[in-house]
Figure 1 (tube, one colour):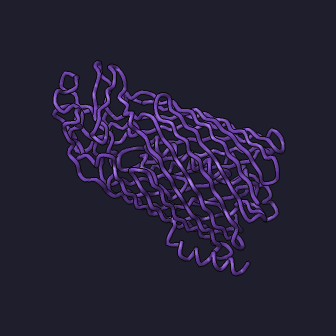
Figure 2 (cartoon, chains in turn brown, yellow):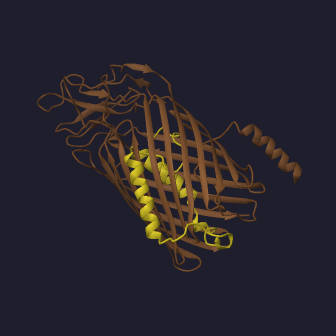
Figure 3 (cartoon, chains in turn green, orange):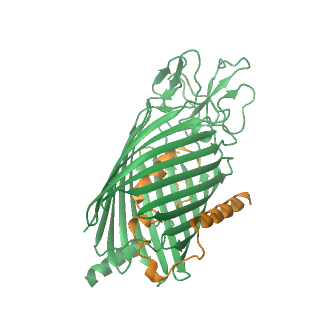
Length: 414
Length: 74
């Protein structure tokens, strides 16, 4: 056994070059005497008339020493459907070129333009090494890699948690760094240049690939309030640098009469090359009898001008010792980015512009229900379904997005 | 400054709602806190998938971890 442990440690020493973004954790984590814990899940996500996603995930955690663990997670992602291209609907049909430039698609009159060629597959692998550094200090070192046909990402991270105050308080600090590469289909269009409307014209390009880096920091404190009550407060910061534009999104340009201008009616979007984000996150976990209430609030802001509030509420209602139901409500409200425009106007093209609705004034409402069944010691099944509705707020005009998700979980130890 | 004030206010409210006269527990009072359902992230895959969905559908992200990126979806 000792030999086996040493080998794993050697492997880990190499893999430590490998860290990733740790999550703020409390030292209260559940332990058990089994060597392996496996969590598996499959997500089905579908938007009305738009994108559908199937995403299986498997996570395996192996105990390799006293309070020392090695964890691997494998994720696959298959995405198909149509995605808004950023142009506005008009009273006549509109024709656009696909990102490759080799074909066109036409949107009917009075219909929101969707790019039907949108599809993606993604695979991701992450590894995590959790090691006690002394009696009160724990380190989690991690790495992840993901690959899409037009995007790849390598992330490293380290997360430390320190128990103080008779283990009633846990202080957490984490750092993460990610190096991403963008390789869009058809190359990266030059920002705010015209999207061709026929295949005989080529778009102006910046190049075929570009990079983006993300450095992030977490500072957190978790406090035991009472025998059935926990409170967590986190601050997170991230700095993104590089190609942050969506190479597939465009904006419509209207003339002074409010009609699409005659020449070059669509421009590729252009975003700044840096972004600094901040978030304050508060979570409260409290037990009432056998039931558990989880409440969280997040206040997030960034230097693109986006400011958001997120409220999340889950109540785990124990039907009996083996069955539980957990209703879930979530509400998200966002102010738009400074460079978000529903459309542009001829003669006043700004330095940066995007019509991506995800940067606009919007709200998201989620309602869901989960059912869980613990059918043997350390074996648990769960199923949840959620309805998600996104809609424009304020003067924003983009159409609503409705989505439904179903997720199946199965966890066991051995 | 405003968010810090907001957060301190929220902590105060939470403490008051908790009805706590003293904060913290002794070692023998940790039975409930050790239960899976009382963990901050009792079902990490649920949290992971939620983060992935909302990261790709909304302008803000972060709060739970020092991660970010890893996906060309936003």
